[in-house]
Length: 404
Image (tube, rainbow, N blue to C red; front, side):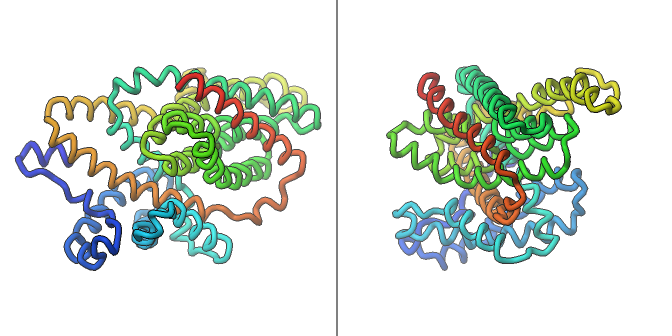
């Protein structure tokens, strides 16, 4: 909107695209900062405003969030500088790698102050904002053309994942409610699905916590494994992104893996992963009904209460998907009516914001990955979760190569 307004008044806006460090020492680093430091300030302010609105709605105080975000932004600046060093960049050690490694080391060796964890804990804010901005870079024609394929892959992945977890879990005599949370975390959309389904079926809080820990650790592993497999199998980025979209556990870790493959991979990843996100409302509805009709009665529990079908679906529906579609429609119209130069500036500015958001996401993933949280997870849960993830990776590869 800022770019569109600037063009409307006749002053093209290109500030944001200069806020990402260029490869150095090919381009002098000191000169970059001396010339473009206002761009960093503007980027910090825009991202703070964009992400603070949902953060405040989640109950985080504005002052606490602003302080924590500023610390995280400063760390992301250092990471982007490190990742733009010419030799490291040539060797593939770019900002996603450094953000994850630095985050994991700090997260496991230190205790972060509460005002920082208030920002890193809801890391989904960063990636969901980035996905909405990606929608503005994806013409709606592409979404309409590939969206059905993405939804088909997502639906099969979710169905296979739950089938594997239910069959194996019942054979290993894992509790029904626990199995529902495991299947959701491994097959739908990671942490969000585990919490949503766990609440729907009245799972024990510690069971939800165990699955969340598994999602975080396995998601971190897949960030490196899946891009390596994509390159090793010589898949094109579109197929690779679709594979990651069907196999990764959460939006944040999946976007990190896709970004390691390339921008085209991020686009196909988003189409598949968003479809999996949409299915969370249906999964919550189905398992909530099973829990109420079968498990609660078997255990003599009182029903949760009467809630209309429409309210349940809307409550669980990921609203940012609608923002993604709206951003695509709006930017498609803007670029069609404003010309090529507008489209170039618009895309470059959005890409710069997405680079910052990805860096903040990867850093938050690392800071939230605490391996000590895995110590209380039972062997049966780990076995079921692992087999479900492996099944999704295999089926995801087959579907991505067939459909994309």
